[in-house]
Amino acid sequence: MSTPHTALPGTGQRIAAEAIGTFLVVLVAAGTLVLSDDVVAAALAYGLAHAAAVAALGRVSAHLNPAATVGSAVAGRTTWRDAGMLIGTQVVAGVLAGLVLFALLHGYEGFEAEGNMGQNSFGDLGNGYAAWAALLLEVLVTFLFVLVVLAVFDERREDRDLAPLWTGLALVALALLAIRFTGASLNPARSIGPALFAGGDAILQQWVFILGPLLGGLLAGLAAPFVLGRSGAPVPGSGLRLPARRSGSGSGSGTGSGDAAATTTQQWDQERPIIQDGWQWDPVAQEWKPADPQWTTPQDDPTEQTPWPDTGGDQGTQIR
Image (cartoon, rainbow, N blue to C red):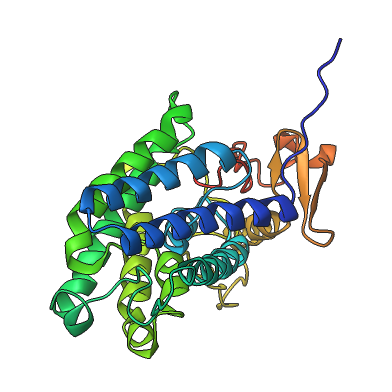
């Protein structure tokens, strides 16, 4: 008896997974800082919420953090088109978490939300930590966190089922380091949501907690291929590759056989679709369909190149 094929997660499922997971992480991280002065408790809550969300939703999508999404895209594991969709979802979910926390805290009579929403801060609004130091700290801790995420979700690892544990522990450790300095952002969605309800001064400081984590994620994405190596070709539409330059017509005999081969190869690369497990991504219909046999036979490559590695699309945990 044949086993029925399991359909890959659709766009709606991925958006829902990112929204729910990010909502959980932001609500717990900010809410714990409001209700407790215990740094250890706040760091544990942040890391455990992240680990639980990844474990529960990772089969569908579990970036939960714009910095992780940027790192995955730069490392060649997520398309920039998908990255934009995921980041937008994460930010909206973070704002919704801030709104829910704002409503819940008003259950205390006389509660004042200004400056008291578990928002990230520095300088006069925080512990007096300088802006440049806060930015540097957020770049550093986010770089380390995203690099760990990219490492433990590497498809060559046999223990990927333990990835939620390792990423959660990494977040706990880095939050323990950073909470006393900035409140430990490592995630622009975690910072933006609570800050919108904490007053104008908190909002003005968010440039550090947006720019810092995004730079950290970008650097982690650049470092990952050098530190970890590549398991295959980057997903089409990802990375920081520049467009190929077109060869001029030149003089003498005109276009040679080398130029013709390069043109054919470029056309083949542009036309080649994303294939995974016998399914082909339809960019027009925005859904997965059974793969066309012509794209599953590498010998059809007119340039007679070796078969391309399976790019795998951008499914599953999304961070591979």
